[in-house]
Image (cartoon, helix red, strand yellow):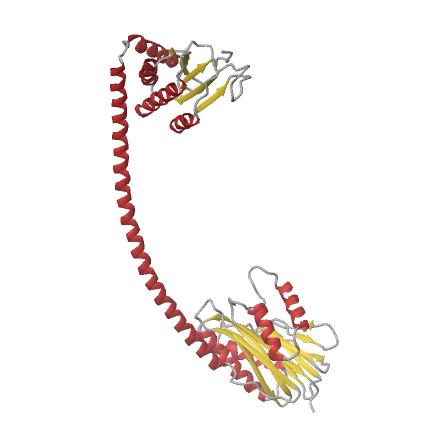
Length: 450
């Protein structure tokens, strides 16, 4: 045949297949060899069935040899079918054997072509069944046991072989029935488990619905309460157009501490935006106290930095442990100059009509820690300038750099509409889709007062 041997040892058994009776004998001998080599019962039947199927498929008057080898490195029982003519295994038969025993390989002889013809020199099919690891001594013992069993076996009639095949078939059917019963039992368990899961899902759905409804009610109540702490309307000041947007966080039912204020004072129009640290009813109470105190102190004519000093003292006296950021802008009558004092808040953005926007970055410490505040800074205002004051919920995110977000805010506001209401709407649509924190956007357009 010209095929190289896989090892030096002689095969444990060589059989010749040329007749139907030889196919029956091959099946019986395959089971004998597989049992002697140590294969499990199921694998014994599979190997015998596979060789019987190939034997019938490849049966020709010309003989075909079948060799059985007990191998090691790795340990395995290998059955090889060899023939020296143009026969080719059928695709369906070879596929069926491969499904039974995946380590099946069809090897045409070197130089052979799929269609046979001139130069054809046969082919080979190798079936390898893995065994537990065997030492050389155990290998020799297994080979000797195979030869002894084969030599001791007496020739069987066709009836004997048919009976043996019937026994194998009955064993296979019993195994199939056992597997079917196990699948039915598992299916019953799965059905019961699925019913339990569906019941739990239905229960959780009802509970979830109740939670959502309660959250919605609590959220709406919190918003209504918080709005009572914010200004009901904005003042009308000559040459000043004001607009404001307040957006509560969508992820919590608690009340935030963001607030704003706009009030006429003896020294001009005062605008303020602040943020009490925390989200709770107490934070809203602190916010309300600060806002009302700011209005009272502003009515006395104090400059912005003095207002911060008084509010810091009030916060430490009546609400110790609480802190807040607060930015105050006082616009002089005539709207040509503003005074700014900032206690740890985001800087306001000034947008002149004829120049680039700029953040007014002067600031001092937050309120509630007792540190001194620097004097208010003064800035000239060009006619038609816009002033933008916000809370951090508009620009702060977990994933983005704050300074990059502020630069984007400035560019968006510069290119946006000059009318305050439209500018507020644009910034909210651009930056506040579903806010994680409360948001205030406060804008003013300043023209010379008549």
